[in-house]
Image (cartoon, rainbow, N blue to C red; front, side, top):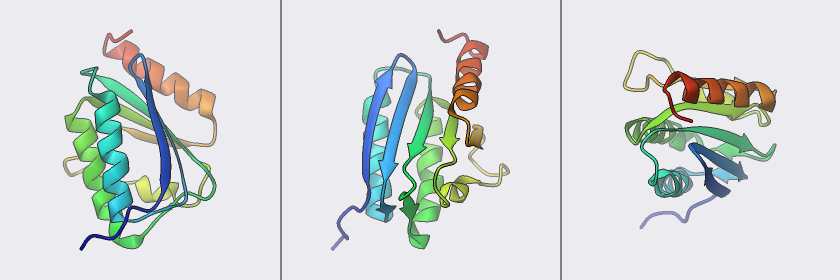
Amino acid sequence: MQDPAHGSFKVWLEGHLVYCDYAEGFNAAGVRAITEEILRVAAPVTKWVMLQRPEPSAGITYDAIELMYQAYVQLQRAGCLAVGLHENSIYVHSGRFRKDGELTMPIVIDKDIPKLMDFLNQTLAKNKIF
């Protein structure tokens, strides 16, 4: 029997930008649920970027960190070109992964949302997605 999903989130698409707001602690089932929703929302576009805006309460259980890495790989395979991650929770640095594996898309973590938006818009422009 699988544990119920923990964590709350809202995901939506504007153009080629997926917004992902989330809060509370995510377990493995929660990571799977948010990943499935991101993939569903991004399905209408072939290439896209994502802005993640966690609330200060956002967290992740230790056993879900590897699953989170695999989720980013899934997103990359589904066309995600880059992720901007707002540094608003002590757990955002769980999203810093070595770049010698399957995950090659940039994940930029910063406290400045306008700076993250510039990075994501530049990524879209560089890939000729307007």
